[in-house]
Image 1 (cartoon, rainbow, N blue to C red):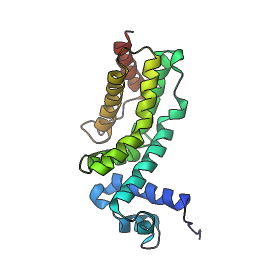
Image 2 (cartoon, rainbow, N blue to C red):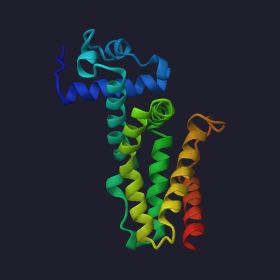
Image 3 (cartoon, rainbow, N blue to C red):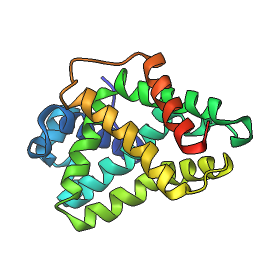
Image 4 (cartoon, rainbow, N blue to C red):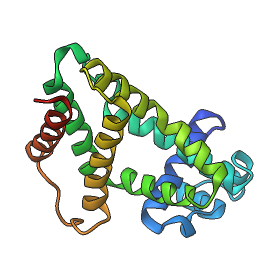
Length: 196
């Protein structure tokens, strides 16, 4: 029998379990007690780590941002000097990863995003955690010669988010586009923004 320790390992366990519960049961199913039970922790362990619901949600958001950075391959984004093609490929791969092996994580993000619309303190935390991808994408489209980086960044993120939502929780929930289809969509969008 393994012994779970306090610190980063337990924090990650609680956060990962919180994300899984959000995807499985929704916001109402996320309680300190439910996390303890699902994680196999002694009762009260989650409360000792995150005393309030806000603290538990912040822990989940922080872990979500870390895990999504790996899923989305933020460290793999191309140099903009390579052109729009490599960026389209990287964005397509990131979006496809979110739709395939990481649907639970994507669904948890939507649960947290919706909750953030009702909790201003969570909204600030959620937006700050997501800024690293938004800022990196803005730098990439700027490097590609975008004439309006803020608007183009919003359009790219809205397109990817819309596709993911439609295929994970929306009317296309039973469908997953191929990587080639996602790549074609991103290329079309970039060509329209950057003039081919």
